[in-house]
Image (tube, rainbow, N blue to C red; front, side, top):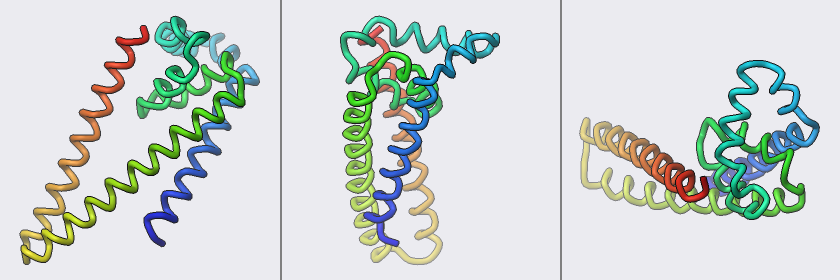
Length: 157
C-alpha cells in the first residue's frame, strides 16, 4: 500500500473519530462527566483554556483543540457543546487535510534522504543512521508540538 493510500485512510479515520467525539459533546457527555470529580476537574481545565475565545473565534478553538496529542479528544468533546456542526466539520476537514499533506511531504523528503544516505553508507552504519533519523524526527515532533501548543495557549487565554 502506497503512502498516498495510507494517508487517505488516516484522513478518513481522523474525520470519523473527530466527528464521533464532537457528537459525544453534542449529546452532553461532558454534563455527565462533570458529576464525577475527575470529569469536573477535566472540564474546568479545558473550559479555562477555551472560554475566552470560544464564541468569537471558532477556528482557533478547533485548531487549539486538535494540537495536543492527549487533549484533542477532550477538547473536541468540549467544542461539541459550543460550536455549530457545519463550522466544526469544515474547519476539522481543512485541518486534517493540511495535516495529511504535511505528513506526505515529510515522509517523501524522509524517504528521499534515507535512500540517498543508504546508497553512500553500508553495513551497521545503515541501522545507526535509520535509528538516529527516527529519533531526531521524534524529538522534533515533540518540541514542535509543545512550542505551538504553548504559543496558542498563551495567545488565546
